[in-house]
Length: 319
Ligand SMILES: C[S@@+](CC[C@H](N)C(=O)[O-])C[C@H]1O[C@@H](n2cnc3c(N)ncnc32)[C@H](O)[C@@H]1O
Image 1 (tube, rainbow, N blue to C red):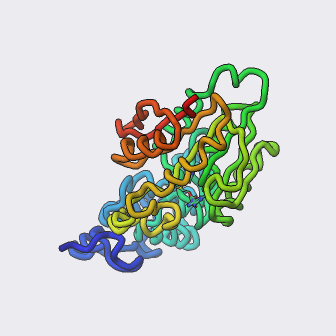
Image 2: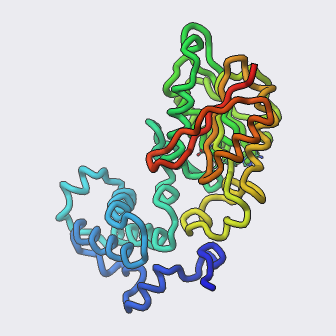
Image 3: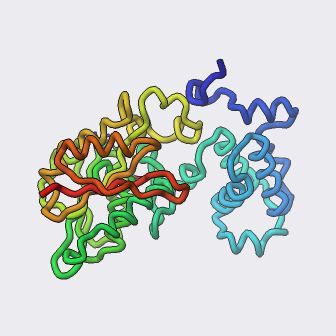
């Protein structure tokens, strides 16, 4: 039986490492290999090392990491593509490339991730926001009762807010909206608080178990809870299992523990006419719908992400 990716230690070989070793190539280019070379040549060398190691998007990742190492924008990387690299610059690039070669995600290396129209800071305790989670933002904005959007303030809560991605994306679209993000991890909340700096006090944060410490009425309740079934944790790609904290991923024996906790508080928290929108893991729509219906909520058909996977479930309290 082959060893699942996450059952190996952080430092042990991945399939990409083994491929590179079998091909007789050094895994991490040496600083001297790019010192004095042009930016464009260094970019090709780094991208090639990523390709040999089985890194996704080798060319894009090489560009992003070189830009970050040298604090240069993409435009300047292009205009200075023939400039020769100093030894210090080459060392900085190789240092970041070495991290990517052990599958550390680019967003973790940069310490930032673009989500919706925001550039969110990350720390080691936060989940890296994923593009498919934007489906939840779209569904929540589409589900807002048009009557609510006129006049009075709208209250939103994001349970398991992490970097604040869902909450802040919604606040960025609805200027009359105030919101609270909860998380069990206080270190993640400090990051969310930093990300909320530009929101003029419209976002606050509470460390608690999902909605346990909140009071209603809440108009928009959103969540992207941890939803990986425990026994599948070992099968996740190295970018995920070695770098996203387990607390952000592990949804218990069937992956549905977070949804059970949300179902238990949803009716108490939701305003009449309020809406609950959650992200779904692959194949979880039917199970989550059953939990929500048993908790007195009516569910719409799940909304697909850009890959066509049912991703966002919208539910409302039954009258
Ligand atoms: C998949 S991450 C989602 C983070 C963020 N909402 C996003 O979409 O990028 C799940 C989040 O739930 C938090 N979490 C895990 N268990 C929790 C609990 N019992 N109560 C509140 N938050 C919890 C984790 O710390 C993590 O930030």
